[in-house]
Amino acid sequence: MNNKTYYKKNCKMSNIFLRLYSLNNKKGFVWPIIAAYIIMYIVTMIMQFRFNKVVMISGVVAQLQVITSVFLVIFLDNVGYKTAVIINSFQEIEVLIVVVLLKTHEALPGTIQPICTIITMYFLINTIRYLKDKINETAFQKEQLNYLAHYDSLVNIPNRTMVIDHINELINKSKKEQLGFALVFVDLDDFKKINDLLGHGTGDEFLIAVVSKICKIIKPDDMFGRIGGDEFALIIHQEVDKDKIINYLTSIMEVLNNNIELGDLKLKTTASFGVSIYPYDGNTCEDLIKCADMAMYKVKSSGKNGIKFFNKDMKDAVLQKIEIENNLRAAIDGDELYVVFQPQYNIIEKKLRGFEALVRWQCVKLGFISTESMIPIAEETGLIVSIGEWILRRACREFKQIIGDSDDELILSVNVSTVQLMKSSFVDMIKDVLYETGLNPNQLELEITESVFISSVENATKILKTISNLGVRIALDDFGTGYSSLSYLQKLPINTLKIDKSFIDNINDRKQFVGDIISIMHQMDIIVIAEGVEDESQFEYLRRHDCDCIQGFLLGRPQRMKELMESKFII
Ligand code: C2E
Ligand code: MG
Ligand code: MG
Image 1 (cartoon, rainbow, N blue to C red):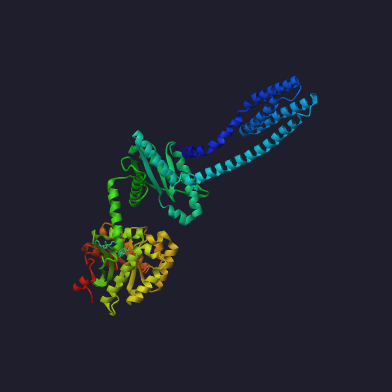
Image 2 (cartoon, protein in one colour):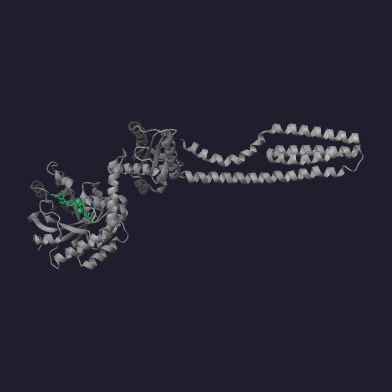
């Protein structure tokens, strides 16, 4: 349904009272009334002249005329008031004629009544006008409130409330008519970047431009609304055919892929689309929203800029995620987390360089949960802040216990999530842990990923410099999976670069590639560690190309510190 039509329908009710006044238009009413009073006064006059005195009927006509005046003014507004003045003037004239021609004072009081009626009607019409204005004003305010309650004030399309109302309306209608419809969640990809880089003002302008372009291709029966930030909903009326829905959404994608001009700026964007279909994916508004949302998140997690229809597997994945999240909250207190240490070696002489601490979770209820499942959920929920602090403290304590006060400059690497790093209390937390454990700052290395620079380069740079000034080392983890930008490395206090396992896996097919990275890093005084080294050929390649250190199953798997000690890894 067209957005405006829907809104107008809702507002019509508030106008019903005002419509009573539309009798205004029926001006044809007044002529019969005037004619009737002319006849009545002529008859009254004739009777008075006939009987040569004031007759009772003149009083009756006068009273009737007061009532008529009131109705005229109420229902015919200005025309009614003028008519009331005319018929009251007839009475005045009639009374004066009678007084003059019959030379009787008996009728004189009758001259006062029409004047009083005209004055009363004057006050009445003004009171009515005043009330009408008030009603209009209230109706306008009501309309405005209604508008604000149902429309998004920035982009001027239905808001979440109206979208939900419309979905419920469609569900009721579709139940009766046995029809289906589609709900699409649309989320602009990387809109946050536009806001961060160009400011919120430009972000708003961009949203307005995007919405106006999309609205041009939305079919009249469908509804396109904003449900928050850069998230929109499209309700496709009576459509369940997947191919047709894909075609429709592809046309929206094309619109977004074309340049959107904002003054001198030309911006392009993409979006992720998640689709749920009534009645197959749910028969309540809540279910349909959840399903569309899950499908949309699936698009986001698999590289954005795409369309996905909801399926049952997505629901299972989400339920599993919720279960992990619920159990993770109790994991620290329940002593379910522990830290393992994977050795890192200098490539020359295979001498131990140190360890990378990695978290493990043996959940009492769900069994062993992999770090790949756990870390993203911990980051999403913010639990990574407390979990990360626990890991750092535990890893430093265990590491310090083993190395004691030995002179060996072994290094402990601990992974730090971007969410953790961006917390204002992060640097103080590091200082506390170092103080508590007595670990030498330059024996601690924090592993960060390039995602820290996506949220805020400036902020990340500031925090990293402060940490570096403490003497703590900084390693850039998983190099090769993100932007792999060399410019960050030049600006930041990075001591170590860890080349991701995906580069090492087929290192021999990459010819000179990894070797080149190593030599560039050396020119920048950055140490290189190769991750996930599993076989001798990889080791050989890395040794040949002067890689500094290696970490991988070839030389050591992650183990608990106790087990590592038993295998006599240490000192
Ligand atoms: P990462 O920091 O790059 O850690 C290296 C991962 O590669 C570890 O997986 C390690 O077990 C695995 N690995 C090392 N050598 C080999 C190898 O030769 N072959 C194979 N197939 N794998 C190897 P893990 O422990 O499952 O950790 C996965 C990721 O989870 C880590 O990648 C890190 O990003 C994150 N993570 C792990 N522990 C923590 C933690 O304590 N805090 C945070 N924030 N993230 C962590
Ligand atoms: Mg790491
Ligand atoms: Mg890594």
